[in-house]
Length: 72
Length: 420
Ligand code: HEM
Ligand code: HEM
Ligand code: SF4
Image (cartoon, chains in turn purple, yellow):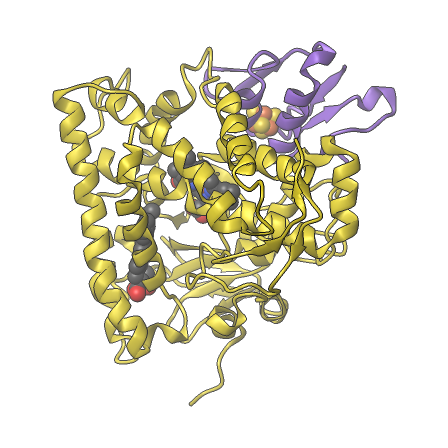
């Protein structure tokens, strides 16, 4: 699966990190790094992370045209 | 008697089941001064603006000792009792807030490079939920609050903190007594509420002493859980003082269950009121993740928060909030604001762009949100999957008294059975 995080929106709340720490990592206090192509086995985790982001910065499978998760 | 403002009406117990028409009225004045000098903020845009405004403080010590007008003579004793507690993270500002929250984060979620203590709890959560549903076998009528919503969060938060589950009946009573006395509306002055407040003062004290005792016990003899870990190992930022630790532990114990109980109970209630949504969720269980967000938007467990005040004059939405004035941010109203959410009174489990305020935003964004979400997703998902033909018995159900932590006292449901 593919994910994109809009790092301009991301406020470093780390909500995604607590729910899918293999995919999202916070370096220091503010800067987020992530795996843009996580294994499909992590889909539920990643969907939970996307829905948990307070500013809805995480988009799932956007590039495939099939919009999933909480992103619009 | 002057006519009550929409806000005062929204706070009346009779309107607890449906405060929304009053919120709609309230939103016509996004920042509305109340007769007691509180500024009530009800629109999404203004709430978000103030959540990110450094001129707004959450420090209770800055709140004017609300001169308990003759109308509310019962109001002060418990307020004192609460404020005697050292400030916890929800009631203080940076830099204390950030330092203490960071320290708590490490103990709650795990070290920054492996913050998975909460996600690791999922098997426990599933086991507890399965046990609760198995326990309903053979019954035809259940109370979703007492038999399903309450036991899960309390077991988890006790385990995480290291609070013995045997003490649950005691602190449950203290919390309920205090909450039933906390009335921020026109009914606070009634005889009945005044006598409740007297009882609540003792309860808050007992809760505080209970926690202080537990801290001392763990100081002598380390044990399982976050409290003991924090007593013994502050980490890079140093250690919290005993008072601050006790106050934050009370906050976690309290916040860690009341809110989650109310969201589970409201979620079941809301789904039973919307059979199409319930059916959709039954057919597509993966919708549980966005569904819980929508359910929280729809019936917010923390309707508003009451400890903020203006540090300096703040101009907003054509009003000036004067320095020192208390500010209430009404999340439950912002979450139904038609300027932000299309068709806000409609439940849409797949609502796009659902940037709701159920867990707030900014620096006080709910500390326990990842835990709460996991609990509610599993509990509501399993309820929908396993309970056969659930039907509401009483609608609207009776509500708890408190306005902030709004939730049903009981949700009676008739059922045909429990699937495997
Ligand atoms: C559905 C469940 C929950 C909801 C709706 C909820 C909601 C909220 C809200 C709206 C705030 C912000 C209050 C403000 O305006 O300052 C908050 C803060 C907080 N919540 Fe939650 N909460 C929930 C569950 C939990 C749980 C399970 C815990 C702990 C384990 C928790 C711990 C906290 C703490 C410690 C804060 C203060 C954070 C800070 O000031 O930095 N909450 N919560
Ligand atoms: C978490 C941190 C808390 C803070 C900062 C806090 C803050 C406050 C404040 C500022 C007031 C005064 C409101 C007013 O002036 O009208 C108040 C009242 C009250 N609080 Fe809290 N509170 C907290 C938690 C709790 C908890 C956990 C309970 C119960 C378990 C509780 C029960 C009450 C009660 C019963 C009142 C009395 C309201 C009245 O009649 O004046 N509070 N609180
Ligand atoms: S939850 Fe959202 S805001 Fe927070 S770090 Fe992740 S992407 Fe950024």
